[in-house]
Figure 1 (cartoon, rainbow, N blue to C red):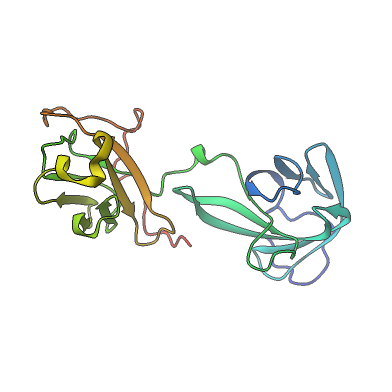
Figure 2: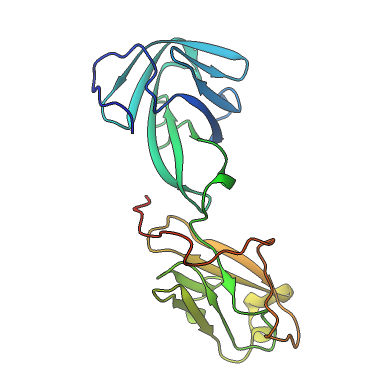
Length: 232
């Protein structure tokens, strides 16, 4: 992504950076709710910062030299990457660093909105869970580690199709993790950074022939997505 101009000075903004980037998170002193790269300037909120020049060490890392300070620095380093962000896959993102923090960037920006990207994880149950049941089954992403509230004794690994089944001794009503008549399923994919958690309401004497969609009408299928991408 972007031009490989190494350490040579570039006076026009590379195409990889151009356009609007919405912040996902940022330090308090980073201005604006988004940044917008024009050909020769950077805009954040109501302020415009003219670019002196840009250098790049790789095709995805750029150092932007400004004529005035942005978040306390005239030198900003941006790294372009496809990331998993809040359980959305392959999100076009820019991390920004002023080099003030050794172990952290100052901000993370994304292109567009998360809703425009595909989920990197999901959980669909095969039916409505009941407090008197002793097992729960459904689909998630292939080969994910699946559990009830992270309990090692109530865990399994989804198969290559994404199917999983978790069985417990007794029934859900006897377990502490089913307090408040809820069942929380955890799923962590083999290439995911974070654990995806979804809460399902437990009913009493439910009819498993009725399928309950707990995803606000979105009908995700485990066959819809390509999970072979190298997310990191």
